[in-house]
Length: 134
Image (cartoon, rainbow, N blue to C red):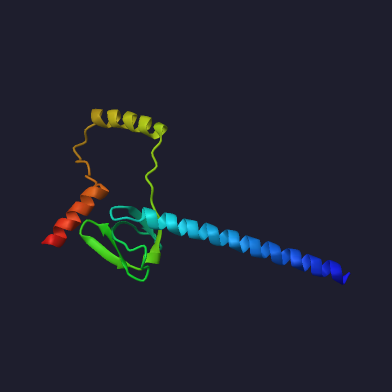
């Protein structure tokens, strides 16, 4: 009876060791992927639920704060690990077709409201560089 219990304990320990190694590899891969995607101009989600655009980020030195622009002209410093994930724009063929239908409807209906101009990441980066030069 004791031999069966020791065998069961050994199997559980081996399973726990293998599972922890697998999880460590997954976490390392996720961290490397996040570091590769986190570049100036990338849109990110912060831990507090705020969305912003990366101004500066050092993937090697995580103790150095990252600078994130929340709105035009509003740049904050956050801990590098406060960046939860990089937000990827997801567009599919169906959405493009729906957008075309919405645009044609919007063109036929003019209510006098001006459309809001949204900056691209490249425009944001160029504007911030111009502001830093001044």
